[in-house]
Length: 116
Length: 113
Image 1 (tube, each protein chain N blue to C red):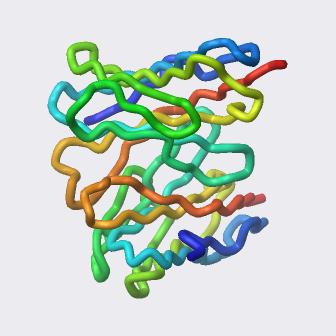
Image 2 (image 1 turned 45 degrees about the horizontal axis):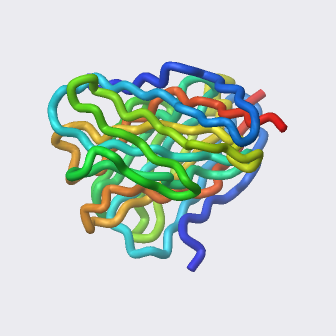
């Protein structure tokens, strides 16, 4: 079965420093990949997605992610974080054959703590 | 345009009580989903409805039932609540335009004592 692993449960970082949140998935066949952000006491909102094409995907709030098929990874990066980026981040994959159902498999989440 | 709305926002139940969580979307989306979020476990799919008139089990369906009342509304019912169902519940919806993006509601925080 498809699975998603977020390698860090918590990532503390100082304001204006770069950050990388790591995500690996289990399938080697074509999948669709997503990063969602959850601010405290809110629902999830989409940061960015990879469906096809360029392996470098740009999203909202200055985030970007790189799809690496050979390493089955989809790491999220930001060159300079702000206090307001403090949130929980979820990597998700749409498994092969799920285009009709739209089902997503989520990783465990990574809490990004930006310190002043 | 409210997006995805959920009621109630908070609920406390005693073991054995029943309740229904309500979800509605105003984006004319075809598919709707119910997830639960527990610390360290991400979001896990409980049930989904790929289109009006159909429902299917997700990863953790035991103890829950759903109803796709119409295209807009998708409810989740706990017939006999258990402490293990203490969680935050999210409803989501998706259009059929192949964008694959799911839109989430604000969540319902449920505590079962």
